[in-house]
Amino acid sequence: MGSTFFCRLSETTNTSLLLFLLPLVSYVWLVFLSLCFCFYSYLTVYTIPFLSLTRSTMRNQPLKSLIQGLQSFSRGSKDHVSLFSSLTLQDLGFYVSDEAAMKYFQNKAYPLAGEAFLLENALHQCRCEAGPGGRPKFVPFAWKSAREDVLGCSTLFESDAVTLCWFVVPPGRVLPLHDHPNMTVWQRILFGNLHITSIDFDRSDPSGETGVVVHAGEIVGQETGAAGGFTPEEGGGVLHELENREESLPALFIDIISPPYYRAPYNIPCTYYTAQKEGTEKPHPAPVGDSGIIGDVRLGDRVRLLKRAHYTGPSMNAFAHLSAD
Ligand SMILES: [Fe+2]
Image (cartoon, rainbow, N blue to C red):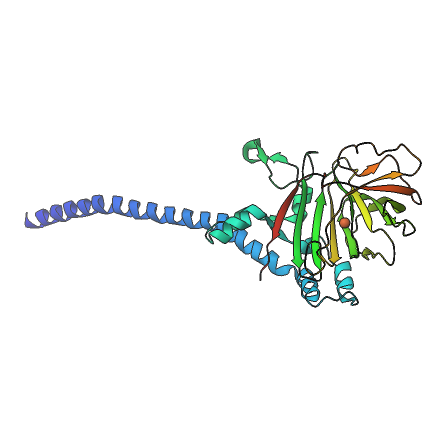
C-alpha cells in the first residue's frame, strides 16, 4: 500500500515535472532558435557584405600605389605613368554616392556598407533587374539601359599639383567640348568605347577662335595599356569632346590632370566651346543636344571656336571612393 502510494506519488511528481519542463524546454529552444536566426541575419545583412567590402577595398593595391605616387607628383616625373598604365577597372573598387558619404560623416552609425557598389559591376548592370519572386528590382547605380542616365564621376585624389578622377559616360551621352589650358593630361579608357574629337588652338590666330582637329575617331577601351596624353606644347588636343555613340554600353575613362582646375595658385577655369568647320554656315547655329561639335568635323579640319557661357552637358552624379585607409 505504502509502496503503491509512493509509486503513484512518484508518477504524479514525474508527470507534473514533465508538464512543467516541457513548455520550459520548448520556450528555451524557441529563444535559442530566434537568437540563431537573428545572428544569421546579422551576419548575412551586415557582417558578410562588410567583410566582403573590406576585403575588396584592401585589395586595390595598384590604386593605392598610384595615389601614393601622386602625392609626390611633379610634371617631370614619369613614375605615375607606368602605375596609371597598369591600373585596371577592378582596381577602382567600391563607391557610394556623395549624398550617402555625407550622411555617414554626419552620423558614423549610418549603414554605408549597404549602399556601396562595385564600379565594375555597376557598368554591367541594367537599371531594372529581376528581383526576388520575379518582381522587378530597381538598381540605383546603373548606366546601361536608360539614355536619360546622367554622367558619373569621382575624384580619387587631388592636390595643388594634380587630380586623379574618372568619368562614366552613359550610352548616347557626351562630355561636351572643353579645354585644358596649360595642363598636362594623361587619359585612359578602361571600359566601353568613346568617339573623341581633339582640337589644338591655331597659335597663328591670337584671338583663340581658330583650331585644328588633331583627332576625330573611335577609341576602344582597354583593360590595360599605355595612357594617351597631351600637353599644349606637344599638341594632341588642348580641347576635346568625349561622346559615347554606343546603343547600350557605358564608357569609363580616367584622367590624371596637372595642374587641377580651380585650385590655387593657377585657378584654371574649365571653359566649354562650340566648334564648327571653317567655311560652313556663319554665325554658329545653336548646338544640337549636349555636344559642342557643330556638323561634321574631321582630322585636319580648321574649325572656328566659340566659348559657351556655361556647361551645357548632362548633369553629373558624384561618387565617393571607399578606401580601406
Ligand atoms: Fe577633358
